Image (cartoon, rainbow, N blue to C red; front, top):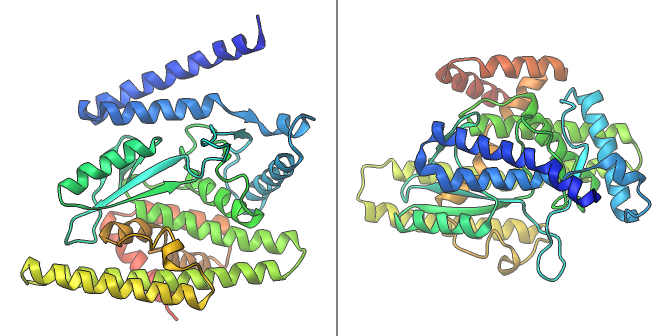
Length: 372
């Protein structure tokens, strides 16, 4: 039997398994989710069917030298994550080259996430699923489907943002591969991404996007710091990374302040017309502040910045908040453990086990303690 035929037969049980999984999810999530769950199942099936072992690709003389070097970097980063950061060993032993764009360019994103918020609220909509719980975004393997869903929400009056994702985690249910969307990243960014996604396997609290993403971001940042120190070489690499974090913190501070001011406006007992006017004023000010911040650090003009090339809205703020809001709290929690990552993971697990109200209180205490 030709090798291609053998590969096709080997993949059929996997595809069948994903179809069964999709049907099971439909029973739990409701028949209205038929199109959504089926696209998710088939998208995941295609990813898993295209996996190639990194070890084999590295040994293959036909592998391009640039790709081989990147895959070796993945092996080193993964080994560091397991041995030095205490992250799970499952995943990132394989590679998937996604279908290329017309013209031969690599695809930038593997999925597209839709985030939505009411016109006069910064609190995002949530969608609930088995295993993952309730999350503040809805992911699609097809940009066209994502934008079609976003358009439906816009017609209902919601603020909407569609953001591309370069990677995602299946939370350890599958051995996630490294994707071609990230393989050309600078090594420090590749390390950060792998640490972030592996952190989701280490701890995931169904139904709490901010907890999960902020925890993973905190692990990512601490992991990259330790990795840069451990790998030695030019010390300016660590300083450059820390300076980038400081710049990012300044941007996040602008977004957080705007979101807080907006929510205060929305909570006022005032007419909707007044709230809309204040909303427009606050977003205009945010845009000026962000443009000035980017100009001060040599960033691209607003017209060339995809994040500033369209009007901002509540959903844009809701999309960024989960990745950063609680990071100071988790940094403070790590400091409480004297920098011991194992103790930090245990403490984070205990936090996850608290009743929601008590968990929010404890995170607020930690965040307050982290303030200068």
